[in-house]
Length: 441
Image (cartoon, rainbow, N blue to C red; front, side, top):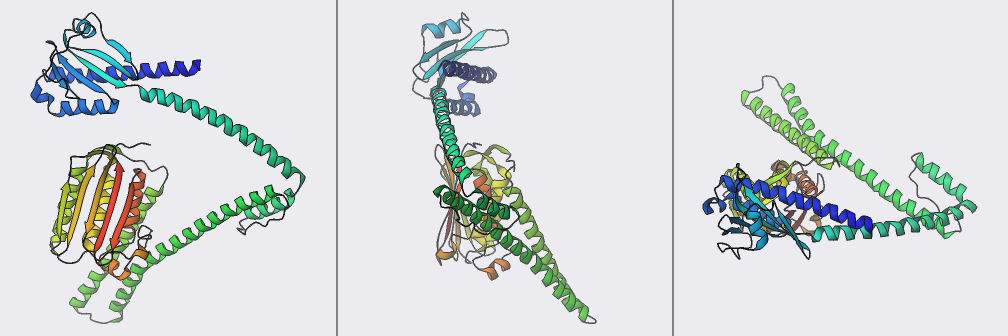
């Protein structure tokens, strides 16, 4: 308990030091803006509000006349504040003041100019509950780990004692066969329950390995088929030209145009495969940065609207609030672009596409709704699988590779998000995406 208390004190000091440093940075910006309300209402005011939200507390900016120019709670804004500790810091008698109240800490920081003259103060009230909760969590986890290690030691001793007396040779032979690449199900050849349970566990593992192997083979087969199809088409076109003498220029240009289309399709499949492989890697790095989601979606729609206009499809965007999220802009741009492009591709002429953006205190939500052909209920659980197409003929006509939604789902999952699908055949499809505002590893 003494060690835990020491850790708690150290973490509290580190947090308060961080708060002080951030307040000093804000104080310098406040001096640059000369404590003017107009500037405080701009980006600086937003920074102060965001910092207060991060700290789960409150920030007051007070000028030299003790007038509260900024209150993140807006309760005492433009009022005056005078109490002993604030006066001492304002007069330069103390370089800071820290006071603990329940689960909160109040820290008063002077705003000092280049001549070391105090021009105002910042009063930050920050929550310390996270430190207390963190220590309790660590303490509980230590107790749980001790219990788990004790239980594991007991179980291991028990299993080893049973294994030592009977059945180990037969089981070892089967496991050796498994290590040689034979994925046959292990047989229950022991009269002991412990061996039966161990065999069942191995069989569950074998089933999963077999499923992975089947999935790998199916994926390789699909990739081979998808890559072979454009090549076959190009060979047929080329052979047709070679078999004819004095081919008319019109036919020659038509066949060459078809071959270029097949080459473009092959290139798109390869690019989508490379994108999917990169996203499948566990070590795939995300370039996380704050991004204005409104601007991102507006830019995507600006690019897609001319394509939709050719088929008289109306594209509308509704934003309920300004949203800034911590995301990898490149990967989520690809995900949202796939959803919106699909809504146009698989829509009816004269239809509509509705895109909306909303958020709460934890997540932002993007909805893409179309009035297209819809997706049958029996296909809705498979549309995110690689190379799956609801209508293969139409997908190829629209340039689809069957990888777009798989890429979209992977990009969203990498952001700890979720995607859901709602569709009625003939009435259209709606995709809803939920992404955390703050990325957490």
